Image (cartoon, rainbow over all chains, first blue to last red):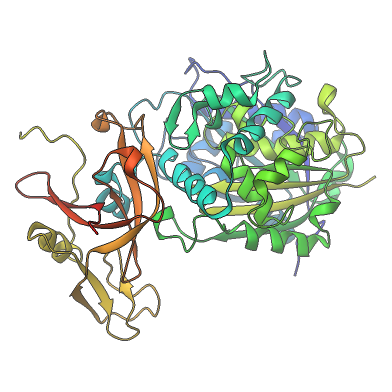
Length: 385
Length: 135
């Protein structure tokens, strides 16, 4: 059993993020992103018979998928909420492919959107987190990633300027992305290190900005993929792994479950990291990118810092990485932030990267990461000509 | 109101002995009677062998800072008194726990030895924090 080349991304939609909460609800943003993706695929809403959705923090509720499907006017034969945090976007891709391969549906709409109006309200957390984490101030994602970065520095001698380089190179990419929220001026390593320290050792410019926005894509089987307007972007490999929920109880702070998810994805695809023409690793923080590149096998374990200093991560470089700017420069519209890595990989492989187009892009690696390096979903895509 | 505005633990039936011991300034952990594993946080079954015969055992309170951060801007208004040192302490007996180091931020480093420090934050609740070990 394998999902290799069983389904493809045939259309994408992505809204321009905004720092403002805006007047629209998350459901309205989902509708807007979905309409874009359907038009992009030249598919009619009636072609969609599968539906995967991420629940927005700004308007949560149980039985979310049916409520969202109803609002969009869908009557799906398969529907579900993908609740693996930032890995949800990547996780939707193989779940859609699996449902299509199993004959449960033909075309799956995957969508997420959210508003930047969380303020001091936190999403509902499970009792174990409330009892053993919150009283000590382990609240939100910043703390966990800071402790991961601190431990990585301790074990491997990783330096602040090496982590900062990720944000700097991704900003170069964002300057060519009209949708990115930070696309007006370049960023330097010195500026990152001079930005406010939020949670040692992470500075403000190493941390994602929450925004309002949304994204969608359509996954279909071979029959509809052949009809699509743009080149179909085939899923060649997928892997998923979860090692913990709270980082305190992970076996290691510095070796992530990306090792398992990426190994599985590359094995299914029959490819190696060196075969990739671009990478889109989840980037909630700079350290996330270093650890993902290490554990996915792009460099030796612990060498992520020196590795990113040696490589040019810009769209014109020797390892194009998050060519949309990543969430660090694009913004994080809730779970749609994790869809941006999928939409950008598809955009590049379709040859629609515009000024930031990676030359001769055939293979892309995408990694979704949820929680505090908890849920990992790795994907390999190919443009077949 | 006693003025303490930070979140407080709500003990469950399973975790109540842990918090009751903390009130007595003792650190106790569950230990699996089948495989011998020390367990934190409290559960109804051993996360290693899934056996449900778990007992409580007082432990040394000694450990090392596995990692830490200085939270300078907290995600919750309740922690408006930031900066504070949030840490993962690895106990001599094995388990790691989320805690605070009661020390100046610049005095904390990864690998430093610490001992349990019981902070009676309210008349009903004591949190298990750590302070640098005296040597």
